[in-house]
Length: 310
Image (cartoon, rainbow, N blue to C red; front, side, top):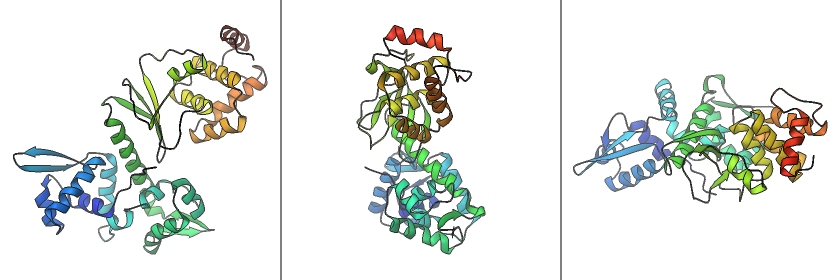
């Protein structure tokens, strides 16, 4: 799996890039060779940190207008004595993404996909400066630096946007995590890491659901295909109206999805309450029914129409 990280050199160049500059100008300011800086700018552009344009023989460099960079700037300007590029480079931003709430090194390592030693090594310099501290075996952000987790999340959002912008200009990210996101677009995307989901995928289970010319994809480099449990959760994220929930009920009934699997997926996509309501609705044959779920008689008619036993 290719997890994009931002290096110290990239963040240092980002810090130095105030207003428009050139490769030569940036190389001189950072005391680097022009060839080194040219390669660095190319990498930064590939990650969405900067954009470039040509004016004659000169390549003009400008920062991205992403919120991640604005927040990064605010910390750099507020704490001028702290070397943020040095502290946040490598795996650190990825670890801080998961530090919205207190977490142990083992928990962070599992969530980020690194060794515990990497967690300790990355957070130790922040701990030495009082930005992070440990209590009861868990790392926590100091109150003054709690927003660093938001900075990390915005950098993840920047990565996700840059990935989808390679395929379409019109899109909406509906859900995202450190390395995955659920996106709505009008464009067909044919790339291994983009997995078709949403209404169109219901057709694979003989449950045709109109998609209104929209396409929905899960971006993930770790899954081979979208499971029925994930599809159910994706559909609720996309639209939790009565019609969508009715089709989720059909899918849950037709595929006999493992309860633990669907509840685990629901927690991941933050639709725990809706999925619990669906399962309870099926368990009680409509006896326990929230406002957006159909009457049991209506659902039975829909199930009969598709030959689904309930």
